[in-house]
Length: 109
Image 1 (cartoon, rainbow, N blue to C red):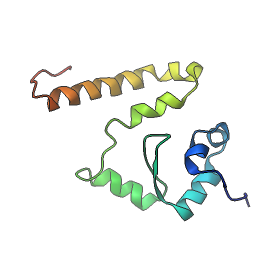
Image 2 (cartoon, one colour; image 1 turned 90 degrees about the vertical axis):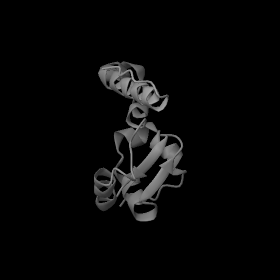
Image 3 (cartoon, rainbow, N blue to C red; image 1 turned 180 degrees about the vertical axis):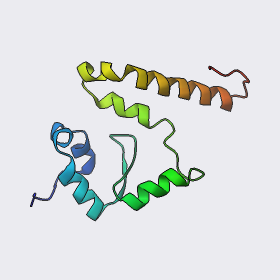
Image 4 (tube, rainbow, N blue to C red; image 1 turned 120 degrees about the horizontal axis):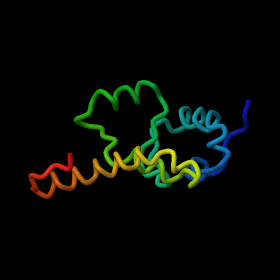
């Protein structure tokens, strides 16, 4: 059994060790704090299957808007380049949402 994590979850979530082996941390989060707001990642972390499914199905209450693109920011530059299309997609979505919220009728695509 892995030892309990003593560092704050936010510090652990952006560590190289977490990237290599996230399972012990996720197991501990699932037991101690299954729904967790992370300032370091900029979003909620859901660790229980039921919560994840609910967040996918009840879109009137839950959104990943402007969150998925942020995940790429934590990758090293040599790996981040592989996700350029992903970053561009979310940048387009942010522009479309900003345009929709400003009252403009233009759509970027």
